[in-house]
Image (tube, rainbow, N blue to C red; front, side, top):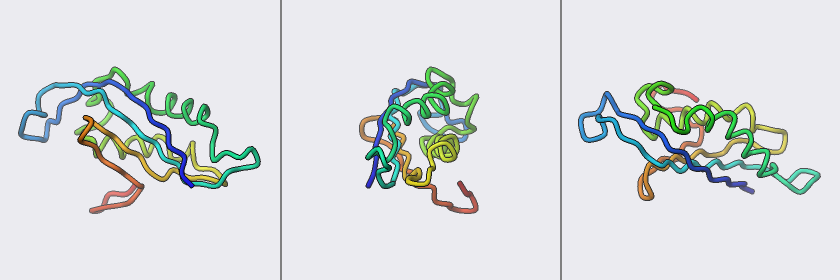
Length: 125
């Protein structure tokens, strides 16, 4: 079973190691989707939506909302933002009955990335 919670945040960034329009300073209203996989506990919940909201606000949104993301994440592509979010949340949301399953970061309504904790090209979670 999957529990899904969606968030929005506004932030500016520029991709210094990219040659194109996005190398210039610009901003997005990002959509962040956090997905937990688990089984309901004795209260019938994988995790209380309010608790997940508080964790995401504390660990992610307080740091990144209305910020210049380059001050937090080097080369803040959607991919690198998703990796960063995963690292911020994983320890706090993993429980006996659930674990962090997926982080989605959407820069626009039609462009986003999905990260599920996998390692690739020598990089690990």
